[in-house]
Amino acid sequence: MLRIARYTLVAASITLALLGCQDATAPDDATRSLSARPMMSDAPSADLVEHVVAPKATDLLIDRALADHYAWLDTKVPSNHKLLVFMPSARGTPATFTLVAKEGARLGYHVIGLMYQNDVVLAQACPRAPDPSSCYENVRLDVLDGGDRSFPVADVSEANSIDNRLTKLLLYLDSAYPDEGWSRFLKHGEPRWSRIAVAGHSQGGGQAAMIAKIRRVARVVMFSSVPDSLPAGQAPAWLSSHLTPPNRYFGLAHECDAFFRPIVAGWDSIGMGASVATTPDPTRPGTACRLWTSTSRNAPVAPEDGASPYGRTHVLITNLLPQTGGYVHMSSHHSTANDLYTPLEGDGMTPKLLAAWHYVLGEREADEELADDQDERDEAGVGRGAGGARR
Image 1: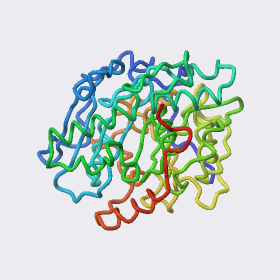
Image 2 (image 1 turned 120 degrees about the horizontal axis):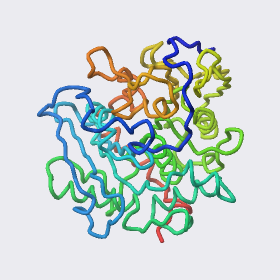
Image 3 (image 1 turned 120 degrees about the vertical axis):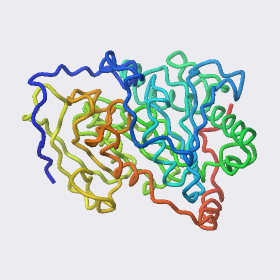
Image 4 (image 1 turned 90 degrees about the horizontal axis):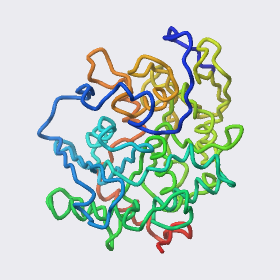
């Protein structure tokens, strides 16, 4: 299905700045501050419980990436007995990805916006490495478990690893709020991955995919991700094998994202069946916008052109104008999940991608017996895998 541009070109010429996946440090954010962020999604609700936790409050040995963790729980909806862990983009923080995370809570998840060590921008560091594919894989593994595979590109201690941060945060939440049920996502003092859905934007989505590569998780949701790219838009080799079944992966991307080609290549490498071919969009010169076609039986769907369940596809590709009013690369890249960029309805509060978010995050399954049965099947005979063993 050929996508046709539906919007008037906002600027006749926009300089493409392919400078990685930074969040608030990207050039587009220079004139935008968190204080200018509109009040989106809905008014504060007593039913939506929010906790803001400093990483050092959970473990004094954590000494990098010290922006706050966030946690949410909606007490007015039945629990789906799953934890959603959302990881921000490179140099981003959970505070900039609250809208999509809160929607996870409204679907029945316990939700954590996890701050992790994301100071190395892989889109900048790894293409210069002697073996870019191994660079992406090794840095992501080190960020996950605190190994030393990627030094000196990255230096991540075990205390600063995602494994430790998530474990210590869950222990903290369980101790501070024992009636909220955070302990159900721990088993033998470690994250119970079979009950955890992992999600993230850009580099954070890549971390979600890496977790799913070596642990069997409940769901994987990649926003503008995975951006790891090789020459000619190829996907790195690490995406081609994974413990989590391919039918648990979902993706949402923007067709004007300069990472669009490696993102869809990564989807195919995972086995999501996107089968997307792209060409530059001549109606939007000076941008990274691309027209695309797909021969897949479960072809990607433009969420603005359809309605959930979108033909049961696992990949959504949007063309919505970012909140910033232009199709410049970073605005489009961030628009799938970032509070400052995601397009809004006329009320200035409701994200236009709300239905798409709900779809990729998953329908609620409030039957705990079914959840337990899935856990038992996932956990039977499934270990960390060689790449994820602790040191």
